[in-house]
Image (cartoon, rainbow, N blue to C red; front, side):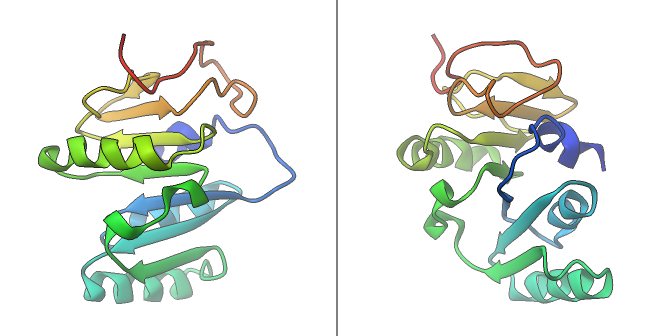
Length: 157
């Protein structure tokens, strides 16, 4: 799945485990694809307990359960500062509120990827199809590849 590699493929090798989260993980396909193809530990949070159960079964069936964790949970209670990569495919009506959550919780060293709907005030760093990559600060020290240098993506000018 190309989308999972959009931000993850740009991470430079590190001596610590990269932690990625999918807010509203649905059936878990984004988390599973990420851990299958990148050296990350993935977490999915979803309100629908049946989708969480399905995701856990898929992680077990595919041998990824040690690197993919799924929990029934409210995305508004997930501490975003615990993760290096934050991915979300949420409705447009949620983007303003999720942006406020990001503003208050990101540590300055995170990649944020949205699918379909943009964050209202954050400046996109790069786009691929319907996905948008944001950086919570100048992240050239953790990102490799062809992404150009720039300062914070946090606020539009």
